Image (cartoon, rainbow, N blue to C red; front, side, top):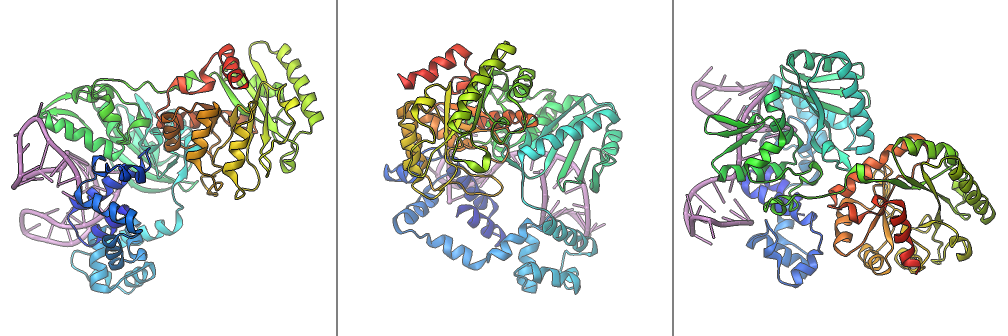
Length: 561
DNA sequence: GCCGTTTTCGGCCCGACTGTTTTCAGTCG
């Protein structure tokens, strides 16, 4: 509601600092790990940073009455269709307001009409070129989907960087922006580079074979659209500014604003070229320097969301979050025994390439027929095969597991006598997304043989909301029963997500990372899950598969005992 | 609308680019 109000107020020409205050409050509230209703009941609304008298009053009104009068008043003046037009590139609040007031434009159709009939070009401050740009913006607005999944952007950016490296000499090149922060979806892709021939780097970039449109191309920056329909921005800086540019282009915006404010209080200025004391540049080559000058340790990109990471770091406490290198194995993999594409041996060899010490085969259980679930008999035979492959490839330990279905009555899809023989049991909902999901998951967790709940909310980022589940209750029970919650790292799931991870951690839950890979070329997605864990402030100790095999087996047995 | 180890008033991150302007406003990231 506050975000919507911010948009409306901005459009109405309200003071931008006020607009920003609403955005700030919204951002903080979304990132709360405690239920805001609880905070409200304790009378602590004003203790939330960014929530002052006015906003606290509005929250109070809403929680008491279910209504917020200021919200309703604000949005009634600005229809959704109008506010939406602010998403059009080249059309900001000022112009849109003018167009609305002078020409009565209320939606996209109106806008198109005034572009075509020439009335837009006649407005003060408008000209031929501006109208052309807005017109292009409309085209882009219509053609492009929303944000793209991190798991789609990731290989795309690696490919692009590789192609550029082959064509021009570079000192340094790296993804920046929300991609580097490992946000689950990204709007566009940012790449930062340095090299001695800046102009040539930009030029080669705009001529890459997958580029279909060049939106802008200057001396040091360029934007293109590649054939997947994604916008990629490249910026090229001098070596001495690489650190400050990387810090700046990585964001997030609220994080950077806070940093710059801190610099200001120390009489310094931070911009993308460096840290400045008066005219003198005193740092810029590395990110570490930038943070040092404002009195902070380097902060991992995944945490730079202004969710308390700066305050935490103030005592020069560094945040020891989990790292990809800490992950010793993948705990959720499918083989061709069910709906996967490869044999257990092939998977083991691939996992060995990743440097893993163990992995868990967790094929589907018998009632999940559409995914080729294993009958009891097949599962017994699979356990035998795993034993054989383990003898053949001694460098990596294959654990016998199962992604056992939680049936509609909350019972499990195999009897305990076979579950007992498995190294680990992952339980999951696959049907009945609206049928007492909470109760069923809790019943499953109360079985001492169930180690992990897979994809606890069932959401698919691009297409599905998830089960009707009371997650706080599941989290509480997970902690109580010592059941691990999975961070399913498959690119369209990333479930639990970062905010729920952080909540669960605060309540004492531990986690398990698995890719849910069905093919060998999906094992890399562990990176995405690690990204979620890092964004959720998880440490190595919070995650099951950072432990050496012996410790992992011990942890799995605790619950059984 | 928020905030305060200078402040309860007067600030609020910073720069590039573009286009329409004769010195700057709007937009973007």
